[in-house]
Amino acid sequence: MPAPLSHTDSLALGGGQIAPCVLIHYSEIGLKGRNRPLFERQLIANIRHAFADDIPVEVRRLFGRHLVEVPAGTPRAEIEKRLTRVFGIAYFAHALATPPTLEAIEAAAAQVVEGKAFASFAVRAKRADKSFPLDSQGINVAVGAHLGGVTGRRVDLTHPDLTVHIEVVDRRALVYADRVEGPRGLPVGVGGRVVCLLSGGIDSPVAAARMMRRGCRVSFVHFHSFPYTNPASQAKVAELAAILGRFQGPAPLHLVPLVDIQRHIVAGAPSTFRVLLYRRAMLRLAAAIARQEKALALVTGESLGQVASQTLANLTAVDRASPIPVLRPLLGWDKEEIIAEAQRIATFDLSIEPHEDCCSFLEPTDPATRSSDHRLAALEHNLALDDLLAAALAATEVRVVQPLA
Ligand code: ATP
Ligand code: MG
Image (tube, rainbow, N blue to C red):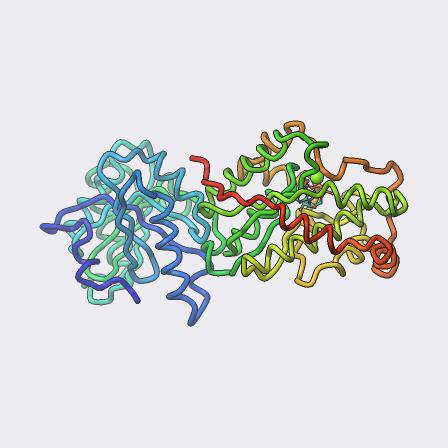
């Protein structure tokens, strides 16, 4: 349900004053028809969550937008840091909320441009509230003339140095000059849960973030070969999960010991198929964890052809081991694209720190580039892995990872 109007009315407008707020426009949410209220509510919850306990905010829904009331004195940089991590936001602006009178709008417009360097400007009004006496063009002309008079700057409608935006909505107007780009996508929580196989590398954290950006909530699974790999590798993965937590909040991280299964595979199968057999074991274990987590799919950071285990033949053969879909959001991405995205989401620097990967443990120098489900299933039949898989699940450690600030 939308917030009751009486609440919205009270927003930062006590006594009909001009009051600062943050205006949020959302991206694809607007297109989702009957799901729209669900998406809007989730976005509100996620915005509140982004400010968590340390900055008390009020968030209101308002005709296809959200308004956030932030305590006076909150640094803009802090607001921007938090909102640029909330998926579903197309852009936002530090705005002034005013009563819906031309006089108040003009005063707010003058306040918004104060101290800004510009030679030319444009006013762009949108009128959602048709009870306002002027139409959009009428507002543009009136406020443009007022600002021209106050600032001495000229109007330029094609290449303005500065654009003043005015949105007249439900008995108030919102006035602002600069838009801050949001991360777009859909709010985390509207898309269901997935389990991401998180290694310490560059790719899988990016894959997790891409799924969050499509509205999914992500739980993490990491496979380690302790004591052959050191505990620092697990700590590194937990830290990557904490960085990713900035986009979705706390999340479970399952740390699964793979070493006994790997030993068994090493002893009982040709070395060329080792990595593929490890991968199939990982998918089976991750799918079992997905069942516990009520997740609908698995996610990996694989990209087609990147390494021998990621040829189309091998991905297909590995896939068959999973009872639920394996999503590979980076399948068609180049390494450079993945790295650029890893830098954007701030996982790159940590990802490239050296770590011991469970798959380099006893990794052959001659991995097969062409395998088949049939071939791998026959090898697994001889290996009789079921008890070892159950033991690995029983020995799995689960932590809830808190987001990094
Ligand atoms: P990444 O940078 O994510 O490690 P990569 O290109 O190094 O990817 P691989 O190491 O072959 O690729 O792994 C492919 C995918 O398998 C990873 O993206 C990840 O989803 C999963 N994976 C690999 N190793 C592990 C592990 N130890 N724990 C969890 N998932 C893993
Ligand atoms: Mg890796």
